[in-house]
Image (cartoon, rainbow, N blue to C red; front, side, top):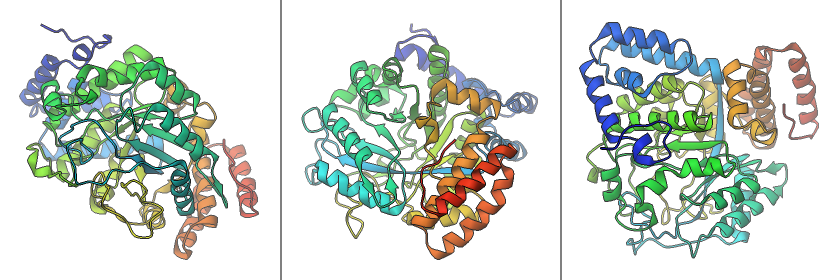
Length: 473
C-alpha cells in the first residue's frame, strides 16, 4: 500500500489517494461539529493557514452562520495580505497544435474540424501590439503540447519577441508561461528567458480518472505531470502556479488534493505555490460540460475560493473570464487577487477586429473590454493593478512570501498599483474610467503605510503625467 508522505518526490505519495479519501470521510463525519469548526476558524484567524484536513472540514460545513463566518474571514484575510488591489493580465494563445487526447479540451488530437494554427513571430508581435494598445502589461502564454510544432525553442522565441515589442507607451513587463510539463533543462531555459510564473493545471488529481481523461499522448503520464512543479523549482523557477479544472472530478477530492500539493511544495522547497487558479469546465468546440458528471454550483464554487484563501493565506488566487461578470463579482471578495480582462482564447484573436471563435479553447463568459473591467473594479472599490515589480526586483519565491507574511509588501504593491493605474488612465482609459481612476488615486495615496513612500509616489505621479513611465518600488 502506498503511504502518504508530504516530503516524498513521488506523486502518488504526496498526493495520496488513501489520505484524500480518509480526509473526505473525516470532513463528512465532522461537518456538523460546531465546536471543531469554531476551533479551526480560530486557528485560521492567526493567518498562518490550515491543513488540507482542517480546510476540508470547513468546506463540508453546511451551517449557514459558519459559512457566513468563513466568507467574512476569507475577505478579511485577503484584505490583510493583498489589500483592495486586483492584478490584471491576459492569456496569449500561441498555438493550438496538440498531440494529447484530453477529453475536456477542444485542442485534442482527434478533433479534426477545429482549424490548427501556430503564430509566426510576426503574428506574435501583432498580438502583443494589440494587447499593449488595450493597456496590458502582464501576459500568460498558452500553447498545446506538440514537440514538432511547439518545441521549447519556439516558446523561447515567442518570449523574446513579446519582451522586445515597444509600441507607443506599451510594454509587456511580465510573461507567465502555461505550457505542458517538461524537463528540468527546459525549465532552466524558461528561467533564463526571464519568465514570471510557471503555471500548470493538474486538471484532476484523481489518478484513475486522470488517466481516463488523458487516454493518449504524453500528458497521460500522471506522475510526470504531477511532479512537474518539483522539476520547475529544481530548474530555478521559484514562482509556480497550480490549479485544477473543477468539474472533472469530485470537487471535495480536488480541493483536498490541491492543498496537499501546496503543502508538499512548502515542505520540500520552503515555499508554496505563488498562485492557485480555480477554472471550471466550460463549453468549447467538440466539448460539452454536461459530459462530465461533477459540475458544482456557483455557491459551492465561492465556498471553495473562500476556503482556499483561508487555508493558504499568502498565495495569490486567479479567476478567469471563463466565469460570468456576476460570478466574478461575488467570488472576487472572497480571496481572488488576479483576474484576466478583455481575454480572447483563440490563436491570433487579439489582432482581429471581431472576436474569432473558430480556434477558441473555451467560451469566454465575461466579454467586457479591459477598460470596462477596470471601470467595474473601481466602482466596486478595488484598485486595478498592472504591477509587475516583484518579479523584476527579484521579490520571488520565499523572498516574496517573507514580505507578504510580514505585511511589508504593502509599501511596494500599493504604490506600484497606483502608479501603473495612472499609466493606464493616461494612455488607454475612457473618459469615465479616467474620472473614477483619478479620484481613486487621490484617496488611496493616503493608505500607503510609509510617509516617505507616499511622498515619492506623489512626485512620480507628476512625472508619469509628464510622460515618464515604469516607476516601481
